[in-house]
Length: 120
Image 1 (cartoon, one colour):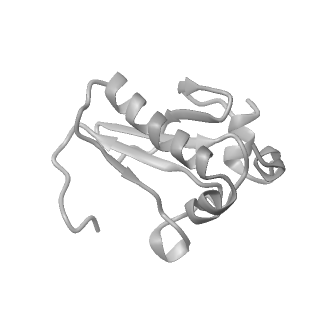
Image 2 (cartoon, one colour):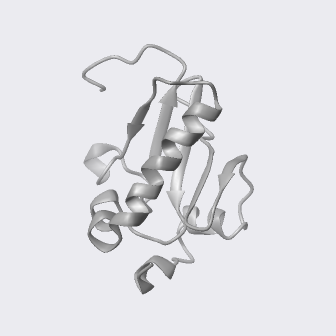
């Protein structure tokens, strides 16, 4: 894993969650990715999948560490399946106009209801 993936930001909420400083309901904890329940769920199942290393958005993660992005997507599928869902949506918001409010890349795993299109 590149050195940048080892970086963290002391002011970043998700870096603090990864460090165990902020309590969450973890559903997956691995060397490179963690997943936990969203505190404001938008679907019956709403999980966040977060890389351990700090990257501001999915494009930055893809450029710096494509293998970490692949792991994040694989864990997204794994946690959806573990929750009993074969059908799920995996969403990455990039930038404030797209709805990103925490600038540490994270995938939203949404499942358990019919999803509409376009998504909002």
